Image 1 (cartoon, rainbow, N blue to C red):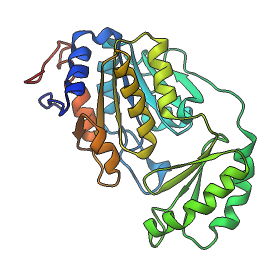
Image 2: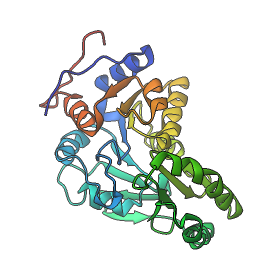
Image 3: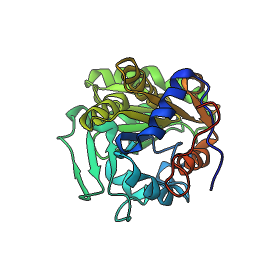
Image 4: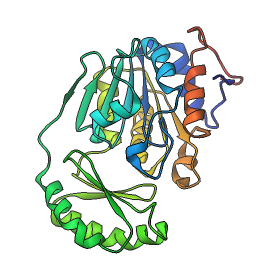
Length: 283
């Protein structure tokens, strides 16, 4: 898969792309999983990475400081659905699962994580009665969060809207927050978000540039983190894995690509097919 390297629509994005191309060895490539590396499907358990994602990441990872998959899924699940384990070339891959509460490093193959928040078990126990008859269903997230999906309900958006207030009340009662997404409401502990995870990872590596690609509302904190890094002198590039369901991300992105296929194509072209540094016109 290949394409011409596009020109970002913003000056900040063009600066970010220039920095990435100039010094890839000190760059962090941050990527959401669902909707960015993997197409959105009606059953999240059937989600799998784009067919070319692993080979492209294996080619990209040795050229940069880190490729970080930043996801709300448990790290082990993202590794399994992504096919990231035991792949030559992916030694610089890290999966920050549960919004950074879990970490899996390809170099060791191990997951590290703190103890789960007790409120997650409490809300899980209360959800069946709350969701009865709505057509919504529950996705387990390894005891660290729980998600309520409405995509398969008779009226997905109306069900999403109707459930938002009662789910927020339930979450608040047990010390959790609700993170809305593309026809999904996730109940999880506060202080866990993709922005904190990305910012910490970039600073830990003393990276000099960052690219972040996402598709959903949960990626907005990561976009804000990149804006914060830009404001303190670390250039960044924001990429939206195109979705008509989340216009907020499209409006804030420097580049909009056509879903996971577009993300994979962009990454495959970023430093040239043979590892050289390519430049789009105007950058």
